[in-house]
Amino acid sequence: MGEASVEEIIGSNILPMCRGDNYKFHAAGREDIDVRMLGSGKPFLLEIQNARQVPSEETIKEIESKINGLENKLVGVKNLKVVGSQGWTLMRDGEAEKQKQYCALVWISRPLEDEDVQSISLLNEMQILQKTPIRVLHHRSPLERQKIIHWMKIERISGSPQYFLLHLSTQSAVDNSRNLILTTLFHVAFFCNIFLLDKDLGHDMLSCKWCLNKCWSDLVRRGSSVVSRWLLLVYGAFLFGKVQHTDIFGKQAGNYIKEFVHGDLWRTQPIIGSILGCRAEITQLDVTDVKMDSF
Image 1 (cartoon, rainbow, N blue to C red):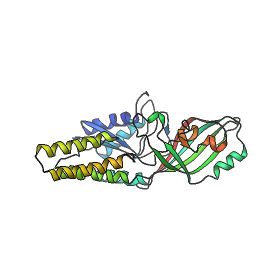
Image 2 (image 1 turned 30 degrees about the horizontal axis):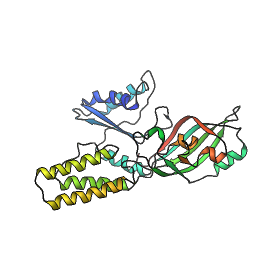
Image 3 (image 1 turned 180 degrees about the vertical axis):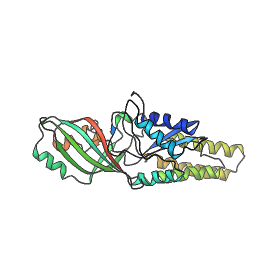
């Protein structure tokens, strides 16, 4: 565990200024705890629940200064402002076209050669297949996804022939089936006259099961017709048929860069090691830029 999360540092400083009960942190993508977010940073939304006060522009500047002036210097923020529902729209629209650039410190089992640098730089729009990494299988669906690496380049490190910096760029591509599944969920909810906006639809099938069970019990309680229950089962069959082949809230964008380097027991193909014909390991990873046209 780290000293504190980005969510905790930002949220704990903003919540008192809004006199809210709680907060939810929504960022444009997630990173591992050992991955730094460099460059110009990434957009985020902080949802204040039951806020009793809207901070003024002056207060917002004070919040920025307070967070940026923390002694540990773990997190920095800029351009804070109060947004309404349009904030969600901007985040959602930007997610579909988000480009991320990374810098990885890589070790290989032999000295780096000029041919290696050239061969990597020639690989543009490269498709890779990634199975859900072993390290996240406990909370991710075990699926195989196709990813795109837009470009790569190698930066040599003077005096370290077996180490180099790998720069690469990936882009989001939100799975359209997510919208189909969400539409189905809310059609079911509307049909059964229940209200779901207070229910967090989570990151796995448990939330879908909750929705269907709630709809079914609601129909039974109200003595609804057999036709109504049959329609619910049709919706449910469609929903779980889609769930078996997609990650409900997943997106193609979430490239696992660490696994692209070391292979994750060959669960990712191809990998840097197979391209260079040697063993490769990643020792450090940074996100150097996040580009979202909406922000």
